[in-house]
Length: 312
Image 1 (tube, rainbow, N blue to C red):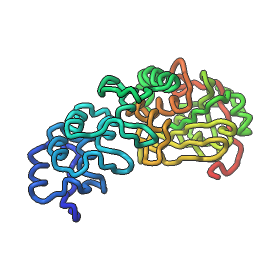
Image 2: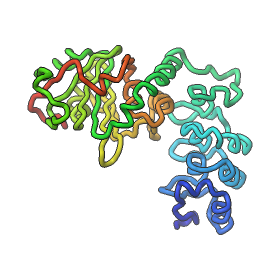
Image 3: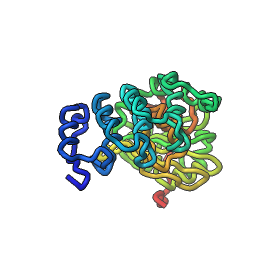
Image 4: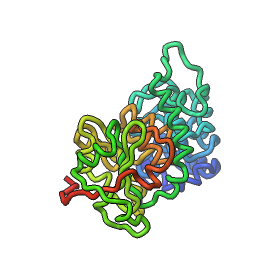
């Protein structure tokens, strides 16, 4: 317990209004930080029940106070906790206050399953045509790639915008292999990668390792464009990275969970691809695969990377 008076509260316990009320009456600061330095109301907005959110909301000094660039209302909307939106609104939270990559909670909700959640003011332009198209694409890819994502442990991908499979092989200086030379069930060679054309670009995949998202690979692939890489690390979970015009611009990302330095695209793609890291990669890069073959195989091309330091 720190100076805010909050002990560690298990995520499930944020639904227990009697327990949270007892902690508050015992001296826990409603404006204070609880688990891992996160404000109590923000934790309740994500993990708690509407009753707990209401209990905290009536006690805090500022209902729109931000934590890592987000208000509690933004957290509730971002994590699709629409049940927790009502008590925050009743306590006076502002749905049109801009934060996180320029998105307000209200505008973000327009991209979700409940676009009529808030009354839209005349001054709010709504989603652009490009943003609306991205939302439609995400709905399709979330469904199409659901099985691939659930069984993705150990997989690595690089989704590259505007680059074809053969162009990607040339950019990496790779040598092609025949299908007869590859046994995906037994392969563990980190230098062997599959490459597949999809509408909008190409996908590099490796079912058994992290090679496609190595910085050197991503840098060569993203010259003049951008790429989103993913490693479904069996030890620590999904890890994302972004490379633009030959340089790494973001590393150690949690796909679907934008950080405080998130760009507008980071926020929108994260919101519309919850719990589906593979769909997140495709949507971020603007790729429109017709099926899951670029992830599940077989790829269009098998290639071997040349012997270089791909971590530079």
